[in-house]
Length: 300
Image (cartoon, rainbow, N blue to C red; front, side):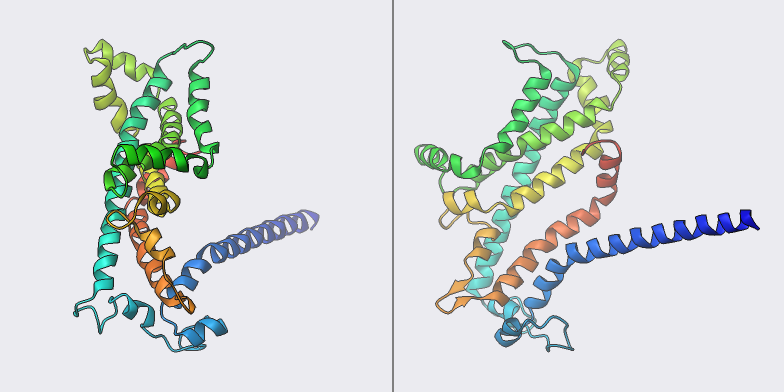
């Protein structure tokens, strides 16, 4: 009887532990997803519903296409000519080009730098491999506002103001430390014996990297690419500082949804929803690579 009581007690403690874990996960999921839910529902509210803080569609308020209509993206306006929609499409394409271009360039350069730091030994004055890797990572400590004036002057002299190329180069520089950190950790998990075996079979260092090591590090590259894409897609400060009309991105357009009577919450929410969706789709399509990158030690 005592043994049965002990088993029941252990089972009860295990059940309570499981319930608490799942309750915490559900609570955290709610906290994480509520801003997304609030943004989507706000895009379908009128001013009165926004001011009163109504949350539940068809219960607290009747959904309305006001936010999407102001952008020319509602079902009743999608077929009509809209200058606001044309501007949105242009800003959206600017964001796609700059974010994807900078992420691809950062992953290519970062993978080469990370492989070198992982496989070779460098010595420059007192700096060694770990010091160089820390130097790259330490660049993230520098606040962006410190670089505002130097980049503004530099881009003016190089005629890169209000250009997509200028943003791509700057975004590449911004996310490169993170990419190097992630990819170095990924390459460190791949045994060096594979490099040695490939070179014994006649491959050069470049051949070993591109034909053997890089395919094995693909999950880590995808994880680095997605993180870079998110950071570049959401970047606002330099996009607002270094662009004026041609190269403006979606975050700048979202922040500009203000009028003489205040913030147009419905328009801002509709724009934010449209800006969120591409990242959601990318995350869904590349989910298996993200999981592989995480389990392989690509992200600490």
